[in-house]
Length: 182
Image (cartoon, rainbow, N blue to C red; front, side, top):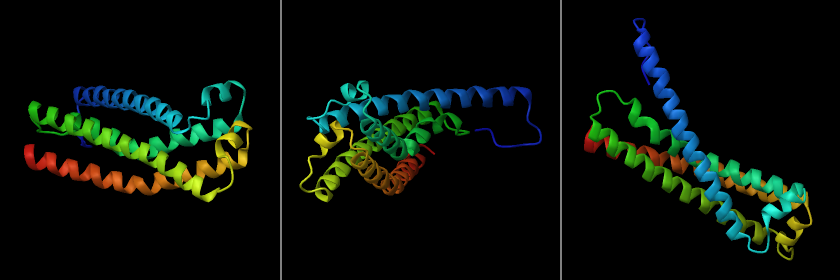
């Protein structure tokens, strides 16, 4: 991003706007891909539950749960998405440095997505341990909103805590990239 200065030209401002739009586009593409992958993986984690069929039926519990899955993924990957576009805004970085930094951003994003999927898997595991004697997937199929809210809370809690680790991982990759190409 162009630092604030009292002597900003129209050209600098225009370049800043274009770069910001590129950053938004990159973030949008990767966020949509991450959400799509996350929903697909969640579907595999719940083999006895057809989430899309339940949504078509108007099952609010499934809607709540899928919204929590999406928010959990977004919470965990947000730093990875930000790092992905950072090389475009780093002044003085060579083209090869930008490309390597961009590749590092992709690696960070993929690791963040893996962490997000881990969060989902752990939430299902913890949920199963908390609700012994309850067939959670059957309850969700039946529209049990209480079960959906509890699982959504577990998902969001774990994602929020793991987000700090993702931020540390992102910072570590940024430091490595700076050491190699700074």
